[in-house]
Length: 112
Length: 115
Image (cartoon, rainbow over all chains, first blue to last red; front, side, top):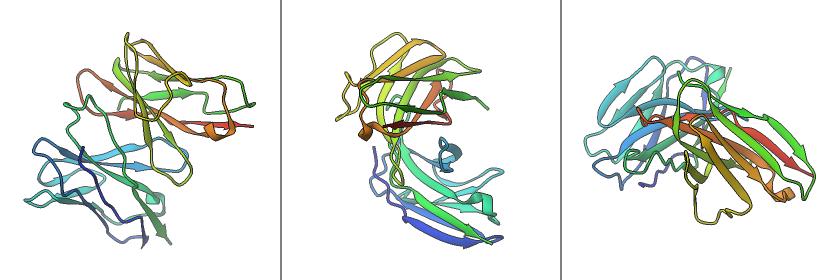
């Protein structure tokens, strides 16, 4: 299971685009990159998953460079309700039986 | 999307007693369920992996006799914290995956306070 490194915290203002970068230098060939969001006293919620290049859904975009040693979660035009902890996870869930190992996460604070 | 529930959402118990937490997959059959523990301002820590009809696999450092896990059906797993102590006070979260997809669905969590 590849280890991930993220900034501990980030501040932003409403309406701004927020980019959270995650380093995963030891990512394996079969590993996917998955991001989760967690609000206080709630379980994590799946945001987005990708393998390479760019993935976009209705919530966020995920940018993955060619070497896949890092990834960037992009949240367009954040609002106060996006204040949460964001976790980057790397792994091959099929081989690990679904096991997820959470790193420290990034605490995003969105201010008015 | 798939829904996972936990019961109770909050529980307060006295030191030395046992507490059972239920995790249910409401609209899918969960071949595997996971139990996590999260202390304030900390990340989730995987405690054990639970497969239906077999013994749970515990992570290193997690006492299997203290945290009893039972996965009796494809929609229910239970975590029993035995002889609870104040240091067991934490936020316990379960998750589940179905056999068709590797996507993991998390429950809302259970706040345990041991007095």
